[in-house]
Structure formats: structure tokens, C-alpha cells
Length: 280
Image 1 (cartoon, rainbow, N blue to C red):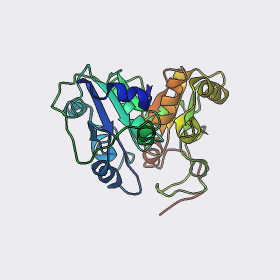
Image 2 (image 1 turned 135 degrees about the vertical axis):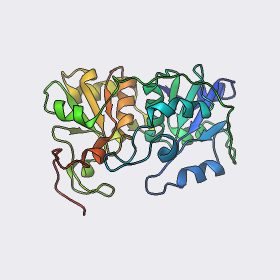
Image 3 (image 1 turned 45 degrees about the vertical axis):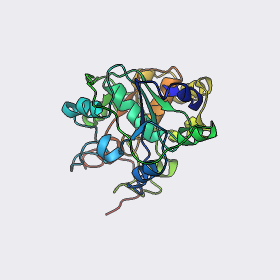
Image 4 (image 1 turned 90 degrees about the horizontal axis):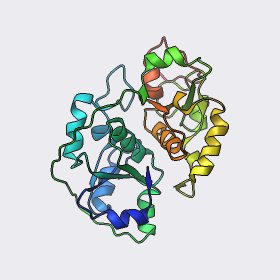
């Protein structure tokens, strides 16, 4: 699930390795591709969060809807990813954007996909070279099929959110979770019964904490609730993937993603919210 920069250096030139640059800033959508063109890991192609890792927004979706199921396998093939490819996703370092890519490929059944721990900074610190320009891979045949048991939708969440054997974990920063501020979405607050674990808590010094530490922290958080009854949410289904990845690293398998997350939840006024701030 995670790969070190040192290990990537050993395999990045192998023929079936595919490296995906997922850098992106919500506040500056052009940042990622511009950064990629200036400097990237050799052999990597660029994936845009909005264009490649999401589908178009509608009035009833969140800000980053899941890609269309009937098109995503073909899209992955255009990235040069085949069924036997080893895929490494990276970003600036925190891993949230890379984790979204990781989750999407796992959603479609691809197991050999990893997040570069520490991202581009780790690669540079390990002595890795960078190149400029753009790159591409030949079209590949990817036959993945989506799994339905690793994510949930708003209707299902409405039915189970008060179930004492279920738990919703929100990955946003605490001020947004509490509704004290909301720089992005129209309504501030969180889904009732959700608890907060900002995704940054999975990191120490820019790297993921050890599996042992993550396991203890998540066990302290979820208590007796089974990992497969945990649902991850955030603002739009991106940073929630980081918490989901951290649980997998910790050996706590089977938690699910609420893909639409907060930005989808608030599109329906009939859905309850705990909110202290509203934006017109």
C-alpha cells in the first residue's frame, strides 16, 4: 500500500511499472500540471484530480464525484495501466491526492497499487532525479471491474448513521468539522454522529506513521467497532481516502468511503447537519 522512495528507485524503470503524478491544489487547479511540467519523477504521467480522478459535477453531487463506472476502465488503460502493472501514485508529500488515485484503482480491483510515502520530497531527499516536460505510456488493456462493498452513498449513510455499530470518521481539519469556518462549501459543519480525525494525524515528519502506531491510534478511535463498519468522509471524497489508506496500512481492513462526502451531503436540505455557519 505504501512504497518508499528507495524501493521505487529500484523498480521505476521496469517495464510494467507505471508512475502517476497526482499533485493538485484545490485553491489553484493549474498548480499540479504546471509543477509536473517543470519537474517530475522520470517516467511519470500527470493525472488531474478534477479531470482524471473525478467525473463532472452536477447539482446533486459533491465536488469530486466518482468517475463514471462505464468509462473508468478505459481511462485507466489510457494511462498505460494494464492488469499486471505495478502502479505508484505520488503527490507533494501529504499523500491525499495520491490516496484518492490508490483508492480508485483498488475500487476497480487493482491490487498492485502503492502510494509513495513522503511523495516527491521523499524522492528528492533519497537522491532521485527529476525531469521536465511531459511523458506518456502506450495504451494498455485494463479489465478491472468496480467493487460495490468498499464505498457507500448518501442514501445508505442516512439509514445507518445512527447505528451504534457503525462509525463515520471525517478527515477534514477540526475547524471545518466543528463548523467554525468553511472556506470551500456553502454550509459548515458535519454529518450527525461523525467523529473527527484530520488526515494529517496519520503523518509524522511528512511520512506515514508506523503500522503499529496507526493501529493503536485507530483502535483508540473506533473502540469495539469492527473496521468493516467504519465509513470515511471528508469534504469531497479525497482526504477521506487518506484515513482509509492509513487503516489498511494498520491492518484494519475493510472500511469504506462515503464518496460524495460533505459537499454532496449538503446538496439535499432534507439531510441533517450539525452546523454553526452558513454561506449564501
